[in-house]
Length: 239
Image 1 (cartoon, one colour):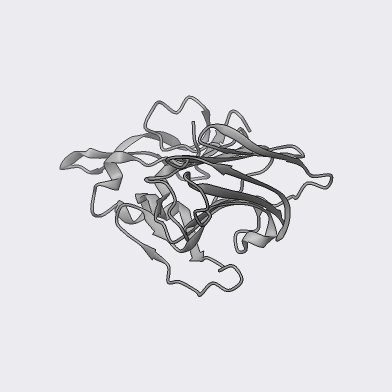
Image 2: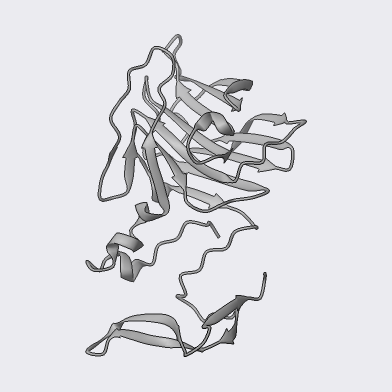
């Protein structure tokens, strides 16, 4: 399952939506414009769509990872999206960046450019035609290999002799909106728990842990919580 997850009940409750909202897992920064491009203001809306921003997930993602982005519509001329892996959470030039954009029309079919950068320097590129444009972009980092896909088709592959060690992942967008709920992170090294199901991956090491209601008068809002006089601790069985 993808790392990003939203607790549907809490996300629709006014007093809890601030911390359970889809954007709460992300740090949103202005996207660094390419040479000759003006700086555009970052915008976001209630649906979790971000435009002209660089979005970094707050989790540290180490090792192999797969990023998938769904596009609400094909990229138009002047629009660009980037997938970011092994970064520092502040600059796309700190890790691997896969940038996809639509090029000016020179033939009957739209042309798209895909570039892979390592620490700000281009290391691989691919260009392809697509009548309707790809509806998904994917970047996979597996040990020293970095692979990129568009519309489910592999477009480039590159091996880094000195793999980067950054632990932050994310995406950037320029000109087009991308919803954070349309961006998925897959990693075996990071687990996300919303405790919507029985907590079978956890072992009690201290305190009393049980499902409790936030308000006694309204049993709909319940939490998995711990209490006790000393240390109240849960250990994950996979740790």
